[in-house]
Length: 338
Ligand code: E4P
Ligand code: PEP
Image (cartoon, rainbow, N blue to C red; front, side, top):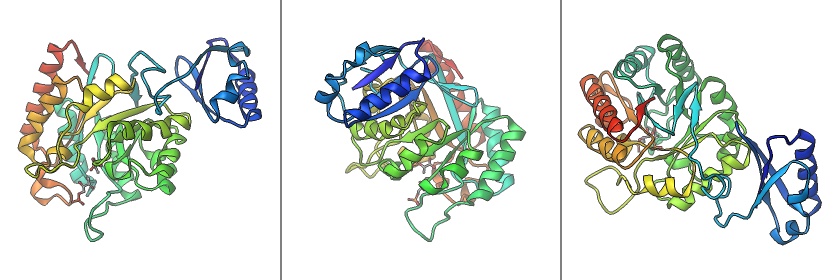
């Protein structure tokens, strides 16, 4: 059940409702959006029915939402959301290109990758300082030193940064540098991390778990939303199937399905799904054609020396071609590049 507060509701109205819900043995999670405040209720719906919530001061509507991902559902908000990251929009009538190195390795490599991204027309910089690696012997990222490099490169290029956080204990630190927190495929159901990200005051890029259904992905987003943060962007990055010609199978149908079920923007990662440089362009075309709100791609000045995922990293000319194709296709679909 979700309570939608009216535009004239006061903080006291909200506090009263939270107390009222608690008196019925429930919990109320308040999410303050740009245009409206909503309160998600957890508990026995039948007991809430006796509270006459609709008649309480400040309440505009009370919705009984049938799906388990209530706050992020289209039932809660029929309009598609736009999430702003350092002023850059994701969603709506724009297509957003996010590019950067898979991992932050050195200041020079990160700066070079960021310049490639900016010069090709990307409006956000990606780059991992904390890397979730399959092998404990693989490069795990530079940690806070990597975040400092990203912050310096943001100052130089003007590109806001998107960077992954892999541990709930690091959320505050990563959020102090990042413009957007990324939660990767391996952590999509790390509920402590989702909750912490929901309280961090930064937009969140939530990648789909490689073994997760779309419903599970949306319920993961709900954990973030329930903590008061509806600035969430979903990212389809490929799922595990029997097919081994690609690193993962890009589930292109997830784009329109997630957009039908949720008001959140949906972008695609063609780098981690295909796992190969020469698949990034065709998969990006498919993503934009399917209605994705953007793409996030890996770039590297010298992919052959990359410490993580070199084979899928684009090089200079590739990125310009990608930007051209994404821009042209977006125009055909009535969108502009962010
Ligand atoms: C993303 O960048 C991940 O850290 C990376 O794709 C993991 O790759 P691995 O399975 O080779 O460690
Ligand atoms: C990444 O984008 O750096 C990453 C770790 O991706 P994924 O979680 O999709 O594997």
